[in-house]
Length: 125
Image 1 (cartoon, rainbow, N blue to C red):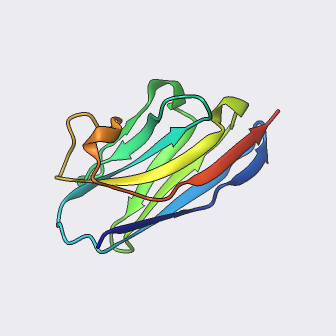
Image 2 (spheres, rainbow, N blue to C red):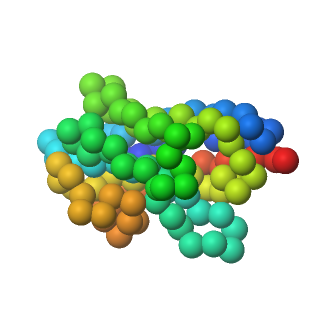
């Protein structure tokens, strides 16, 4: 049974930084992709960043330069470093995993097979 557990969320002032972590367990597939998606109250879920089995990353255009996705497959960990946070970055951040070495649309939630429970990020102005 695949489990994804996020951690590292919290409250921060605008301009601050947070690092989210996601621990992956139970994944028997040798190749899988990982991603971070978020959802703010009253808004649709949106893709933040993704990384494939080869380590190639994809970012939402509006987040490029501020967020960095990384992974440590030996430790089964996924990370999201978030810098220069803005109030509009607030929301629940989800870690997700999808089968395959790469995904056609890595920022689409429908591409993913497994999800974590989410971690809240709140950025105050």
